[in-house]
Every structure is written in C-alpha cells, then in structure tokens.
Image 1 (tube, rainbow over the protein chains, first blue to last red):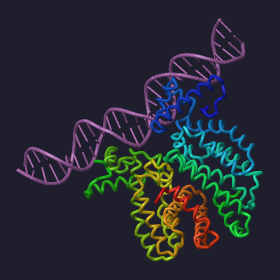
Image 2 (cartoon, chains in turn purple, blue, green, cyan):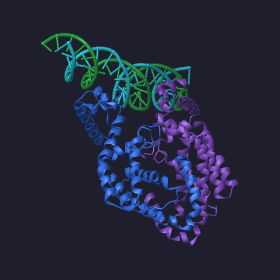
Image 3 (cartoon, protein in one colour):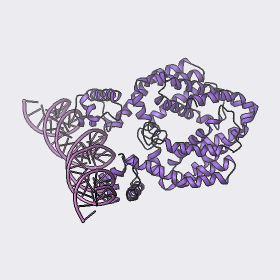
Image 4 (cartoon, chains in turn purple, yellow, brown, blue):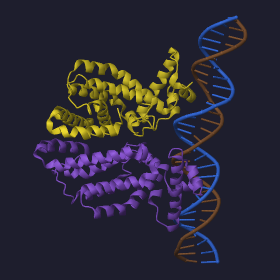
Length: 226
Length: 226
DNA sequence: TCTTTGTTTTGAACATGTTCAAATTTTCAA
DNA sequence: TTGAAAATTTGAACATGTTCAAAACAAAGA
C-alpha cells in the first residue's frame, strides 16, 4: 500500500504528523534542497526507512504541507466569503489570507512554485495537485457567484480559473520578492486588483463588445472546450 | 579552472563538442531526467570524470545547448529583422523561428523551462541565463525600434521586455502542448498577437489615455526603476 | 632527447533520494 | 493467553550527480 492511502489509525496518524512537523522544521532551517531525508528522519526520532513508510518521497512532504495549508485556511476563507459581499472584499480577503498563512514558509513555497512542468508532481498545474487546485478554484467560483459581476457567457465560466491563475502569479512574485516587507508584492496586488476590477466594472460598455468574441475564443484555446 | 572559462584549444574544443552532441542525443532519446551522466560519457567515448572536466554539471549541458541555439539562430533573426518592416512581420518571424528551431528538442526545452525559480541556474530568469536573455531582449528591442510603434514614454521602455515575456509564455505553452501538430499553440500565437497589435494600434486613442499612468506605475513595480 | 610543467583522463569515493528484504512490534481471533 | 497475520521499523543496498587525487599524456625548453 502506498503511503498516500494510509488508513487513519490514531497511532500512525500521530507518527505521520511527527514526521511532517520535523520535516517542516528542517525545511525552514535549511531550505528544501539542503534538507536531507536522513536529517528529517533523525529529527523525528526514527530511521530513514520509517519516514519513507509514511511519505513516498521528499516531494510528498511538501504536498502534505500544501494539503494541510489548504485545510487550515479553509475555515478562514469560508468566513471571509460569508462576511463580505463585493468581489473586491473577497479577493482581498482570500489572497491576503494566503500571504499571511504562507508568510513563515517562504522557502517551502519556493520549492512548491519552482516548477511549472505539469508533469512534475509539485507543479501547481500537475495531476497530483489537481484536487487542491480544484478546491481552491471553487473558492474563487463562490467569490464570483452572487457578486454582481456581469460578463458575457463566453467569458464568465473562465473567470474563477483566471482569478486562480492571477493569484498564482501574485504568489510567485511574492515568493521571490526580496523588497523590505515584501512591499513590491503589496503594490502589485493593489494596482492589479484595482485595474482588474475597473475592467470588470466597465465590461458592459458597448465599446468593449467587439472584444467578447476574440477573448472568448482565446480562452477556449487556452483551456480547451468547457 | 572551472569548465566555463576553458581556453579554446582546437583539440579540447572538439572534445567538448563531442560530449555536448552525445548529451543532446541521449537527452532526446531518454529525456533529460532519465539521461545519466555515465551514459552520456560512455556515448561520447569517455569516462565520467572527463565529461565533468568539460561541463560543470548536467545542467551546464543544457545551458550549452541554449547558448548554441541562440548563436545558431542569430543570423536568421538578423535576416528577419532586416527583411521586414512591421512589428507584426518581425514578431511572427522571430518567434516562429524559435518554434521551428526548438521543434526537435521539445523534451530539452521542457527541462529548460521547467524552472521559474530565479535562483535555479536553468531558469530563464536566473543570473546564469542573463546574458542569453539580454541578447534575446535586444532582438525585440530592435523589432520595436523603427517599427512605428507609438507608446507613452512611461511604457515604451518596457515593451521589449514585455515582448520577451510574451514569447516565453508562448514557449511554455508550446512545450506542454500535446495537440496534434501543436495547433493549439499556433492558434494561441495567432490570436494573442493580433489582439496585442490591435491594442498597440489604438494605444493613441484618447480614451486609453487615463490608463497610461497606472500602467506605467505597474510596470515600474514589476521591473523596478529603469 | 630528457625534463619539467601544464593539460586531460581516469576511476574510486561521496552524498543523498529511494527501495527492499528482513526483523520487530502490534493486533486480534481462537 | 497464544499464535498467526498485519503493520511498522530498521539498516543495508542501489542509482546517480558530483568531487577529487592520482595517473597518463602533451607541449616545450634545455
């Protein structure tokens, strides 16, 4: 049985957590690349093989962190969605929450976002991260629904995925932002968000009508039929 | 002495080429990850250590390919620039040339573009690839200059870098495009290019004037002062 | 030609992610 | 309680990128 499909014995669940915690510690201390599985195992008080019994690979540890992050953020995001009404409030809330949560783990996020290759398990575009991605996109879906966003039906369905992509881009910028307090990311977030909302606000204006067609086709090309 | 700063003895230059050629062969056959340095060395008829005498690392082989690619494409691009006048012709020419050149090396390009981390040597954004990147951007610079592109001075200086980024995005899509004949990439190229040119054409229209300010600031945030 | 000096080549050794067969411990039905 | 079956733990072994000291070779001045 692969480590992914563990039954949840309380005992083994605890051991698993212990290893994950140890791993995150070592990652934070040494960075992802310099951290060795041997050190992680030792730090968790077990042998090398035991660590591999619970996690299929070093990458799997990062995946576990990612999954845990999503789970721990979910209630906050639920709360944000229920307490706000405008798209702006919601996007600021959701994306802001993520920055806040990931703040102490910049190096780990680096390991996560260093890959674009959809075939690499850690890539945000991979099959391995699909379930996490889908749940994330669902939040953006809900942020869009019953905010009074008006878009033609050739474009609207793509909006949640586009917002997710936008957020990924911000994250990427954030990960490598070395400015004090990551103020460049803050600026970027602010400016792009308000520009985007402005575009959405004026999307009904007749002048923009001729853009619907090509824009819709473009999205269909990128995302395939859907 | 590190392999990078080799003197160019004809003999050693030949050996170096032999190793690079062998490496590209093995990469194409097995893919970058599955290719081993031992196999590459054997395929070049030398010992493992000898290969490392000429190339500091496996990644260095990809870098060498990248450099060689740029050198081999340069004359074609020069020709394209001199034979065409409009920005559209030039962009189609330059970017099309790259697709054509890289066509037999999709897997290698995957290895190259799999990394976004600016600290990873193979990343298109890394210091290690800076000289290649700069030379590439210079081509776009020349494609812009003396095409009659009108943009406010708060935006114009960023255009070559933006075009380079656009091209990188296309490449990325291309690398992972599994559609027959990579027709989705062709479509994407076509649609985005014409949209972009349309935007550039109408950039002088007064209605768009209020966008100059925020757009310029946005670019300054992303690229830093310049 | 012989010696010296610098270049090239070699293969062993190392580090680290990963696998695996065997040993140990736990579980639980009889 | 006992013993078989399942889960857990161990450490050795393996593959592969990389390093390195030593050997082999080449160049060139005497």
